[in-house]
Amino acid sequence: MSKKKIFKLVFMALSISFIIAYTIEETGFYEYNLQNKMVMTSEAMTKFENDLKAGKDVRKEDYLVSTEKDYTSSLTKGTNKVSVKVNKILKSGIESIFKVIGSFVEE
Image 1 (cartoon, rainbow, N blue to C red):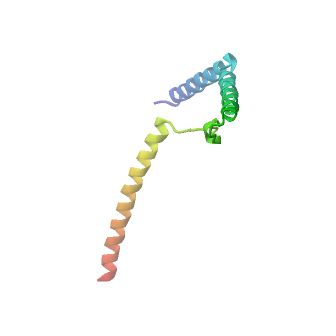
Image 2: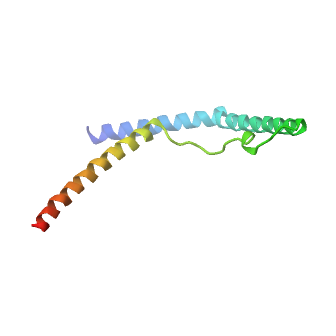
Image 3: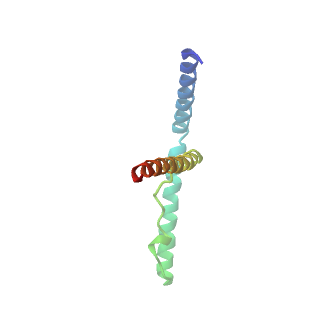
C-alpha cells in the first residue's frame, strides 16, 4: 500500500469515529443513559424505604447501583488469549534454552 492510501484510510477512520461521537453527543444518548441510572437509583431508594417500613431484612447490596465499569470487549479478550499463548510459548522456549545451557555446564 502506498502512503497516500494509508493516510486516506486513517483519515476516513478518524472522520467516521468523529461523526459517530458527535452524533452520540448531539442526540443526547449519553445524558439519556445517565437519566436512566438516576431513575433506577430513585426506584431503589423507594424500594428501600418500603422494605424498611415493612420490616424486611435489608442489605445495602440489594439497593445499590453498581458504578464499576467493565471495559472488556471481544477484542481485549482475544488479545489476552493471544498474549497468554505467546507467553507460554516463550516460557517453554526459554526453559528449553536454559536446559541446553545447563547440560553444557554440567558436563
